[in-house]
Image (tube, rainbow, N blue to C red; front, side, top):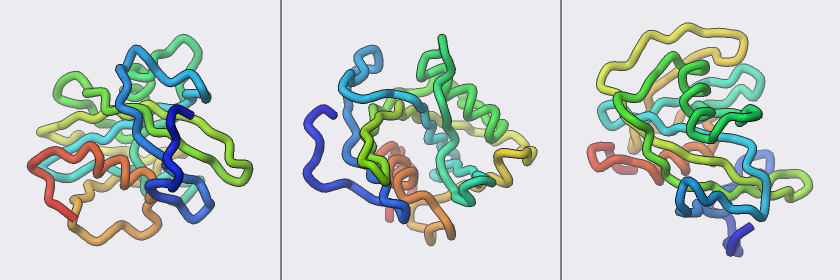
Length: 165
């Protein structure tokens, strides 16, 4: 990984660590580890969208795997719509490449992080993957079973109108 931090920014209960957020250009992803996933921090009225993943039982940012032939941006938009029914009001803004160290073997990988806004959230329909959605405001109590890596990434994309922790 490119200039990894000696200490992680945050570690989850399984030992997975967010090491850094590389602010490289979107068209120049780091090449020293795989880039298999894309995430989106979608904001509405100072709150960020979280989805409840049925399998993991955790609140997390919408996102998932990048499919063959798909760009990270395309994957972020697709996953946002599939998991939450939401669309950003305009183009997503690229926020950077989060560097992860994954347990149990310390494997390195990157994600692509995007952020956007919506003025009018769309209805949500639960499915076999996502049980619920919620809008969380920084400064509110943390959701029970929240994925700390995702919450940290959301805070790194926080717009000026979001409440502070």
